[in-house]
Length: 227
Image 1 (cartoon, rainbow, N blue to C red):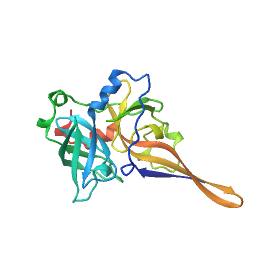
Image 2 (cartoon, one colour):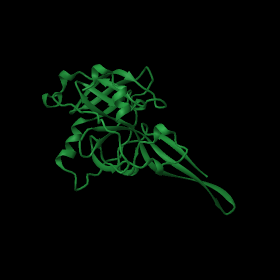
Image 3 (cartoon, helix red, strand yellow):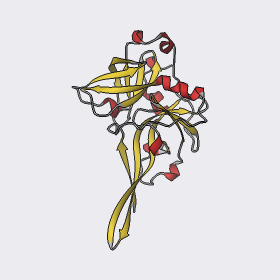
Image 4 (cartoon, rainbow, N blue to C red):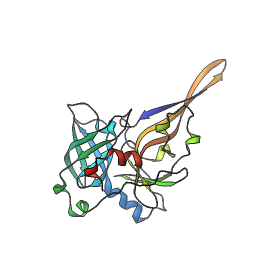
């Protein structure tokens, strides 16, 4: 018997990402768009997000949280800037939240940048780059047929290489076009029951990481904030 489970990654400290030797300057430039999303009072973990331009940051909804007593700070370009919530989703629905910071406090080089959301859907085997402020890692889109069969259809956009890629809010980028292909949301685990010495033993293993795909991101962003 095999069942699937989604683990929200917002409460897991982000792993450092190794930079493969084949990474080029263009790959590393994606780190300019990556941010830390910090709840105040500070949690023992740090979430991630992606700067889209015009002072707009997108992250996973569960990273930003729902508690009214939390304030949010975005660490970007070496500064900690207060963030306002423009649009809030939910983990069990659309795991995205849109934030804004005061663009005037950003360096000119960053104020001029814009990150586009990919128009094409992710394809099985497609090579991607996962980026956080600490580094980048290469991965690829995993075929839905390799995911647990009982996983809900909405969670079937995923990447492999669970141990070496970023956690919630990390950006998934098309390795060729360098557009935003998705936002990391949750770890997918599979559980299997096997017999050992006459007893049922439940074992789990990591399968992939689910990301909210570009099409969902584009639909989530209000028209006035799209580039």
